Length: 148
Image (tube, rainbow, N blue to C red):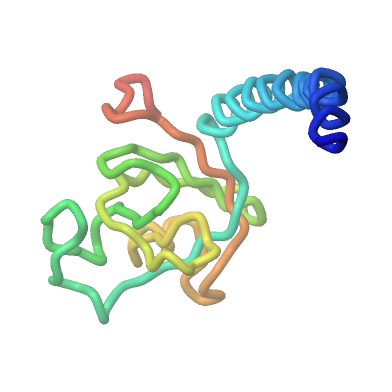
């Protein structure tokens, strides 16, 4: 009985301490979510990463959009950008760029940002090497009319 009375007297104090400990965690969680949302908004405009290319083995097979893959078209596969998005891909070493449409998905374990068609990879000069560091700019769902 004595233990119960002791617990009953300590209960309000323990509850208060518990609430005080939880309040900063809730406040910091909200701040973290705001920062993450701000970073996500910034990161969708451009991205630097590695690009590779794919071609003959997949030529004529269906892509994620349902189109037949054409290695001679200016397209790419990506897991980071929505299907149907237009991207400007610039090879950082050569400075050459190409505009491609995302029409396929890559294997989920791939660490690269885009997998270019053979034609797109040829345009920026990464066919012989196989991979290259690129800057990717998201142009949106419709191709801008003011492109060179």
